[in-house]
Image (tube, rainbow, N blue to C red; front, side, top):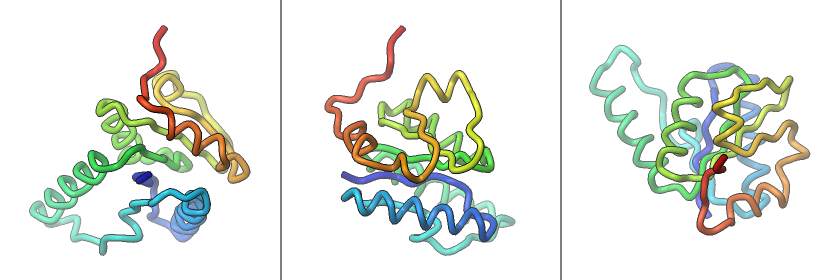
Length: 137
């Protein structure tokens, strides 16, 4: 099963957190796509490079079986990727290492977990549900 790992990696702390999450997911047997591990930085002043990267990330989310989002830092790109995956019908896990926060829309569209100890067999079972369906009221 292939997961798209979404989350900020702009500081050393964020990059180290993404590394730890990726390792925890791989120990559970997931193939993990992480842009911070697979793609070189781009020139944010280049419209062409930004457009290519945007299209690449959208395709990688589409090819993935689910999305695992690291929400520490409340990165807008991560939140957008969660919404895109959810709109595609992909299962989404929302993860925080630090202080959890509440968002009605994210809570209604993702499995929320807090802390590395929660990246366990329950996460694997969540992704393995077939077919995945969003919660209905």
